[in-house]
Image 1 (tube, one colour):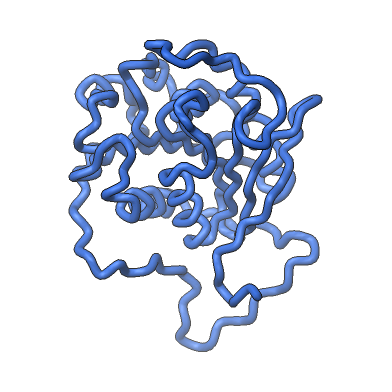
Image 2 (tube, helix red, strand yellow):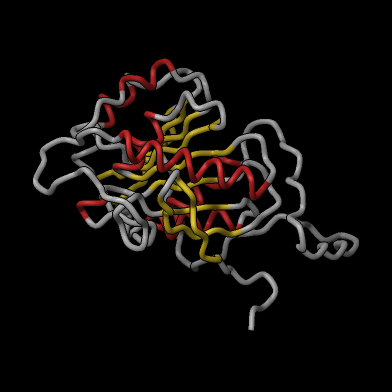
Length: 258
């Protein structure tokens, strides 16, 4: 039984040419819909790693549709990956960029939106940054971009809103170097007491991304999906904002650099 307000994704197949990618989709009415790109497939990166799962949960709880997926050759996704273990740098990511594009296309078709927010974690941040020119992407979220493994200098030319979240203790994400690569429409947040996995600060990471999504001009609600029941009208004095659950622990202040 599914209770009212329960978080429930459904499994979807993301078509990418002759192959199908495994994905998890959750509907929502708030724009923009968000597609989530996982970390490096050779290093166990998939759509079920804690950071991607937490972001999907937090963004969906805030009312946005989400689609997370596995790259080709990962989990139940068809196709073969090109990467090998032990490489000191991220190699060719053309296949993963193509996979991201297929996920974006499917998310747009599902939500009937005109654009998406692309969210990438670690290796996925490199994939999202490399796809920044895609007209279907109107904003980017980069979580723990690994500056030691990938050149993110192309972000200087990105004129779309960009949010970067770095862990306080993450040697693979060089914050001082990264700040010099960001354009004028970028914001960086440093999550205290976290490392590259964010396991100690997952709720804070999710809340920081949701808070950033709420900035900027208010976007119209997305069209209701076919067969989706109408929401009951709120009672007088009620609010339709969905609050993230209180863990009972104090939330550390984020160090925001505009």
